[in-house]
Length: 554
Ligand code: SIN
Image (cartoon, rainbow, N blue to C red; front, side, top):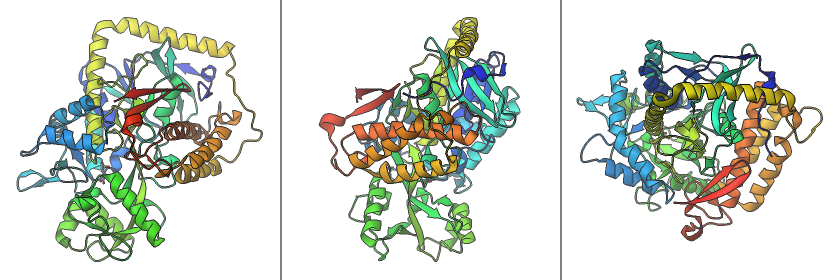
């Protein structure tokens, strides 16, 4: 049984005034939702993030953002490709909402000043794995996320109506009688513990990449939002489906750098260490097959050749084009002594994206009143067992927009009532936490070195719950997580790394649980001991909630 809170609310040093809406996370999903809400002048919005405002997964997105904006492409074709990539587990209505609304979202981005790349007077579109048409918009060549994040940030700051709280670590969502009452937060600079009451809380905290050895995600991606939602009683869905990106480059100083799928979209090949294009004949789309298919082939090739890489070859693409279209990739490789025009580039797969997360409905609502989620932390049903490339930035925008509509509708109706309830709720939670000691299951003796434990968790998850899984290794991973997760010294501390470690353990335990239950191979979930897709028994979602398991047929 997990603890209810990272830090007992009785540690609270200040309770702030009520806010209409709190957003946790400042990537595309969080910021676009905040902007829409703040544009309605009556709504007070606060945005919290544990890092600087621009430090988000959005910033690092290279490839682009998908929308069917030019004929003969259509939303129906985008819909079909998304459903195909999701391998039987997408929610068709959620996909329809995404693909139909996408072009309007692009217009909104242009209205706030986003500069998409233009060629011959029109928005330039590229193709990525699994897409039937070129429909991926990009900016700054391969710096799409950076352009989006910069424009969203400057626009949201210029509005003057959103309050930003960088360097604030949201510990937990406070829930009273199954309604949101607020958040409990640690100011990272002062280490003060404070409560912000609110009856509308949007979790947009992104991914979980830091629980693996290799990930394209930034260091902040420790699954905080999903872990706090789970502790609060939210349902978590499809968390066993973790997408690995096929082509990640290791720099001289052992950092990871994504080489966008768009490079393959523009014609680059994958070659085995013997020089052969191994994707040809393996899938009709060869290098542009859906990501899970490419990753599996790369793993097979690396195993066959005993290497930890395959080659990415762009030497046949004109140099002038590479420089304009992929300026960041070209310059990063140059820093590492490589020339994209002349050299074969060593790449391998790394964790990239969590398909599942906090289960939400078509309005972005979780199962707790007033709790919402959008972006990578959410499971809207759009991605199923495997996300179609460049659908994620768009998903954050579309479901942020749905959340905005829902909050607006509800705030109009019953603002004072929900305000009073949230304030009462935080009061009751505080009262209860002062009188009732939070039970911590296990006394684990002297605190262990957290950095070492984090390293151990990453290695365990990579080896035992990574790209290929089986019952034995999942059991071993479960034992590691269970041993640590209830240790007393991990809770009621103000050490940020320790608190993040609890969230990482929480997310890891959910992944292991769902991956152990799903006895089949589908999309990004591959079981060596159950190598086939099993539609008869497993065309369903696994939902985890407060140590309970539910199944939902598609
Ligand atoms: C990429 O540029 O390859 C990543 C795009 C994505 O994951 O959507």
